[in-house]
Length: 111
Length: 112
Image 1: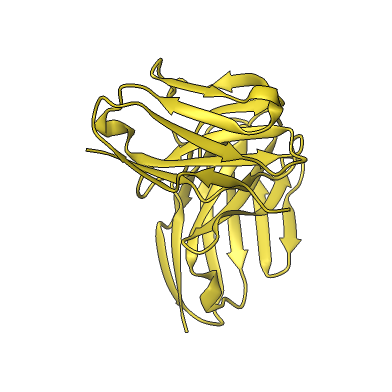
Image 2 (image 1 turned 120 degrees about the vertical axis):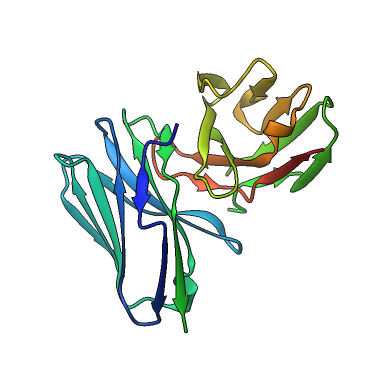
């Protein structure tokens, strides 16, 4: 069964705008990861946040984690057409890299 | 580093036939993972190896599924007596220890 549940499921934005997507999960975790998938490059790791971290940045990406609410958010700033993809959160419950993926958010960035 | 490769990229088979997929991980990666992804869903974990040892199998992996990783290099995933419900994208990933996973392009299986 899927551990993560992203919300919203589909997002359409203009280039240059910010995109925010959320993920909730049910059990305790060691870390949470975000992945991007598009037809050109397949599934690509974006960022990992550990359970003792609250916020992490990587380039135009900002991830937050609230373990009390069992939720995470991914913010993409100044979006580009190339950011058009599906975004998945994945939880690692025990730190052994056995990932449970959510259903994904589809993001379309309109040039 | 040539990335993770999978073969074949597409497979069409008739119900009841056996199929085998191959995954070649990044050479220095000691961990290898198999996932299955259906349309509109995220990948579902099937099994993973550390070197040649299969450490965990998902309950999704019925007795018709078997995976091997001889000598801790490439891996094969075999599905016996395929069913229409097996139609999916089969993804392979590799990592060095528990660092980030690198995914291959996948094998799309269609069972008719």
